[in-house]
Amino acid sequence: MTNVIPLPTRRDEAWRYADLDALARVWGEVPLAPERIVVPAGETLSRQIVLPVALSGVSITDLDVEIEAGATFALHLLATDADYGRMSIHVLLHEGAHFEMGGAILGHSDQTLEIVTSVNHAHPNATSNQVVRSVLAGRATGSFLGKVAVARHAQKTDASQSVKAMLLDRTATANAKPELEIYADDVKCAHGATVGELDKQALFYMAARGLPPQVARKLMLQAFIADAFVSLDDDAARETIETRALAALEGLA
Amino acid sequence: MLKIENLHATVGETAILKGLSLTINAGEIHAIMGPNGAGKSTLAYTLGGRPGYEVTEGSATFDGQDLLALEPYERAAAGLFLGFQYPVEIPGVSNLQFLRESLNAQRKARGEEPLSGAEFIKLAREKAALLRMDMEMLKRPVNVGFSGGEKKRNEMVQMGIIDPKLALLDETDSGLDIDALRIVGEGINAIMRKGDKAVLLITHYQRLLDLVKPDFVHVLAGGRIVRSGGPELALELEEQGYEAVA
Image 1 (tube, helix red, strand yellow):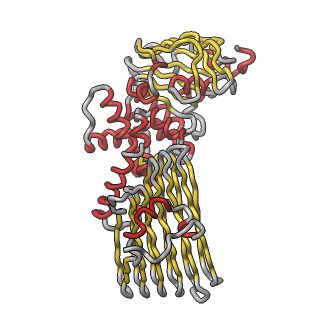
Image 2 (cartoon, helix red, strand yellow):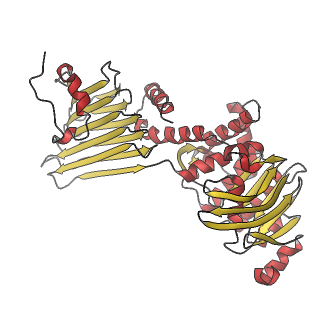
């Protein structure tokens, strides 16, 4: 069966950094309906998603989340195993709801990995916090496109985004694109993005204490991506996703 | 223990060390003093193997081994400790984790068994107490949010835990208040003043040398040792300045 919907193009803002060639190979098989998650009023739901491994090399996870009044949804993501991997998350927040997201993008060789979010503060007093940490080696591309929309009456919205990328090779690429669309006047929307390399002074300091370079790099990268999972309260769940992330890091350094 | 002969080193395009020779035997404490820009820190970094510090001539042997042929982490495992003038912050990596990994990496390189968690904590507690540092600080990320003095004290806790043969201490006394200076000085004595160990203190001030009494004092100027003497040389420098003495 072929999709009737045409393949996205780079002119689509949300697909700007996508690997469209890879996508074209599987376009007929990509499910077009996102998984829908509703968090009922006052409840708390936590999900961890590791981008699944697909035979085609293309892996797309698409979520449509609605967080009802006073509810909390905590989402932790790991994007690592795919030639082209995309995690697309659309979130609608009701009054007083909270969306917590932590994501790690760990890529090497020619991988293209991206997290694309659209967080819609449609009602007052809702909060959202998104933290993304990328470690990229080889010719990998890691992107975070984060849109935050605040509706006219969604006063006291508090939304923040923190995006940091670490490039292990000069040939790797990191994209960080926050996009704020704010129609209310009493809101707090913070975003920060940095792209850097491992601190050479710290690497020498660690070597001077006897740490071989690969161990020093691993310690620093482990600390760097820990930011993405620190908000995961369930210790066992955090350990599980961190263990996967560490295994992926071993493949990078 | 350490034998430096005719050492020349450049940083970038600039020649900094220009024929430095120095021999340090086990059981000795040496102090190197000298004006700003003389090459004191360059000497420490060159011996530590910092990238960008290139040896163009001369040699340095450590216990008979060619020090300059070793990677920085191998120099540490061989027993060389470099105390930094500006200790580096490592966000997200706890002091304890950092030191345990470092110590066990060194032990592994020497063919020794790693310390267990309990053995390591006991050792860390003991050395933290010696430097009067709160164990809570050792649980925090390495040097992050530490004051200048706390960073220097942390260097000495690290030295105590690692227990090196030779310590090169680059202005460990700078940025310390009088009480902290005394604690650090006593720490150096307790950890390093032993027959099988040696220390090279790089300092500007007599105050540290009152606490850690050197056997030899050297004046480094223009990339070479221009004068050597006993502890009285430091006093002479303090009184007359480098220009008159060197």
